[in-house]
Image 1 (tube, rainbow, N blue to C red):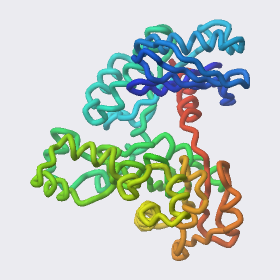
Image 2: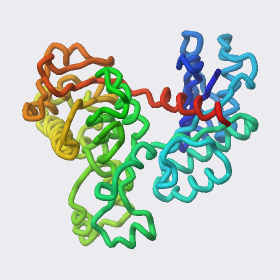
Image 3: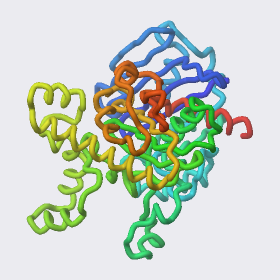
Image 4: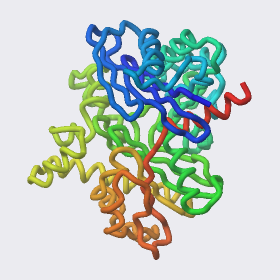
Amino acid sequence: MKVLVVNCGSSSIKYQLFEMPNRQVLSKGLVERIGERESAMSFTQGGQTHRRTCEVRDHEEAMALILETLLAGDGEAVLSDISQIKAVGHRVVHGGEAFTGSVLIDEKVIASIERVADLAPLHNPPNLVGIRAAMHEMPDVPQIACFDTAFHTTIPPVAYLYALPYELYEKFGIRRYGFHGTSHRYVARRAAEMLGRHKYDINCITCHLGNGSSAAAVRNGRSVDTSMGLTPLEGLVMGTRTGDFDPAILFYLADKGYDAATLNDMCNKKSGVLGLSGLSNDMRTLGEQARAGHKRAQLAIDVFCYRIKKYIGAYAAVLGRLDAVIFTGGIGENAADLRAKMCSELNLLGITIDEQRNSETVGREGRITTDASPTAVLVIPTNEEAAIANDTYELSQTA
C-alpha cells in the first residue's frame, strides 16, 4: 500500500512516498519558493536525484506537480496511476488540547486546526493549505493529520501550567504544549526496542537537537514534560531562538524603545547561538571557528551544551529511574564532540561515555556509553516521516 507523507510550509512542500507497511521510500522531494517566478523542485526517484526550476503559483499547483512527478519522474515513474496512493499523511504542528493522537481528517478536524492557528501562526495555516491542496487533487483518498503536539498531551497539569493567573489558561489556552512530538515518540519507541523493553516500559530523556531543539522526559513510554512551551521559543538554546530567559528582559527593552515586533524578531530569529556568537546558527561553522580560536563561537557552544546538560539533570529528577538518554536531530546524530560535552560529569546519573563508540557513532544508531554504564546513552536518527506514514497506514485501514 502506497502512502504519501506531506509536510507543508508557507512557501514549500516536502513529501515522501512510502510502500507500506515495510516503510520503503519510493520517492522524496521538495517544492520550494512557491508563489515566486522561479520556484524550484528537487526530488529523488529511482535512485536518481533531479532538480528543476519552474513557476508554481500556489500550493495546489505544487501538489499537482508532485503527483505529476510521481507519475513521470523524468523517466523514473513510481506510480502508474494516482489511484495507487491509498492515503495521505500530513504533518500538523499544533493540535492544541483536542488531539491526543493522529486522526482522520474531516471538516471538524479542519475547524479545530483553524481554532488553534493563532498558537502556531507560522505553521498551522500552511499545514491547512497543504491539506486542502491534497484533498483537491485526491478527493476520495483518506487524509490523516499527525500532530507535533500529540505525544505531549500526556503531560500532567503540574508540568504544563504556567504560574500565571489561571483564567489565562481558561480563556486563551495558555499552557505548555511542546513540539517535535513525532520525533520524541519515534526515538523513545526505538530506544525501547534497542534495550529489549516494551514501549511502555522505558524511562528516558529524548533530546532532539537541530536548529530547533527540545528535550522531553518520557516515563513509561509517555511524555511527562518537555522543554518547549506555548510556542517553540521556550527551553533549550537553539540556532536563532533564545530558549529560557527572564521575561522581564522584554519589559526592560520595551522601556528602552523596542517595540513588540522587534522583540519578537530578536527572540526568534536573531538570538540563540547566532546571537551569542555573532557568526552563525550552524554548529558546524561554530565548531570550525572555535577550533580556530574564536572565543564567542566557543561561548555559544558552551552555553548550548550547558543548557542541555541542565535539562538532562532536571528531567532525571522528574523521572526517578532513568534507563536512557537519547540524542537525535542533525546535531544530536552527528556532533560527537558536543554529545561528549553534554554528558560530561553525569556519572551520578550512571552515565559514562565510551569515547571510541561516541566518535564512531555518527549519523547512525548506536550506544555510546560503556558496557558498565547503568544508564544507556543512545544515538538514534529520527524519522518523523516514517512515524507519520505508520500512523497514516494504520488509520487508513479503518477509514
